[in-house]
Amino acid sequence: QSALTQPASVSGSPGQSITISCTGTNSDVGAYNYVSWFQQHPGKAPKLMIYDVSNRPSGLSNRFSGSKSGNSASLTISGLQAEDEADYYCSSYTTSRTVIFGGGTKLTVL
Amino acid sequence: QVQLVQSGSELKEPGASVKVSCKASGYTFTRHSMNWVRQAPGQGLEWMGWINMNTGNPTYAQDFTGRFVFSLDTSVNTAYLQISTLKAEDTAVYYCARDYNMVAFDIWGQGTMVSVSS
Image 1: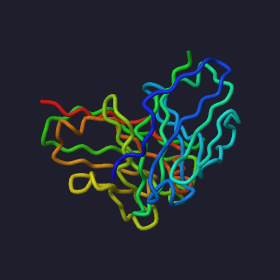
Image 2 (image 1 turned 90 degrees about the vertical axis):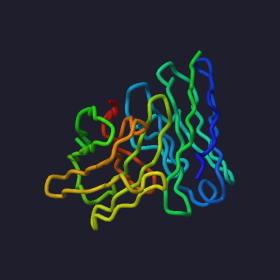
Image 3 (image 1 turned 120 degrees about the horizontal axis):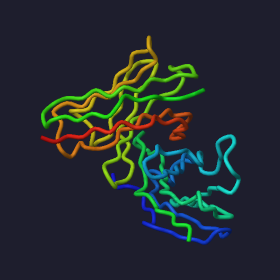
Image 4 (image 1 turned 180 degrees about the vertical axis):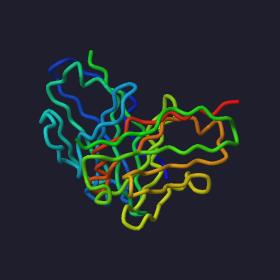
């Protein structure tokens, strides 16, 4: 099963908003509302940012939001800050009862 | 606090085996399934599979059948990943991750670097 499709890189200036897309199929992203997003800084473990498409873990900044339409999901970061610079991965539950990750997106804060 | 602490880095020769541990604390160990995720150097995240904490039954992703074994020791709140017949391409960081609910991997171990080289 191929990875979910994410752009390799996105960039934005401090204070701006950016959106990272995650495209799958009707066997994964389109099948359930079980899409998560993870942030990973270099040399660190991933961190859960969004789960169930649009839910934020307790204590996480509301600058991070998620959505889904059909077979595609999106992560939006508003009010971009320098510390948001990291790799971002989407993931989805699949109809095969497995989990699939996206290829990852490198966010650069200009 | 809720955390997963993994065992330290390993350097192994091709053909050897390795066992990575993931010790949980701060929550009821059997309440949430444990997943394993691989990240090769400079690459993305790969889901390896998960283990049912109540039955001990593992489920492996397609690329991780045969040489990979997930196990548990509930008496010490620890999950294990064993890899046999190591190959150079197994060189990666291996993470354990607690599944809060359907891909909501909310707690991650710090990662264990496994290097395979002669």
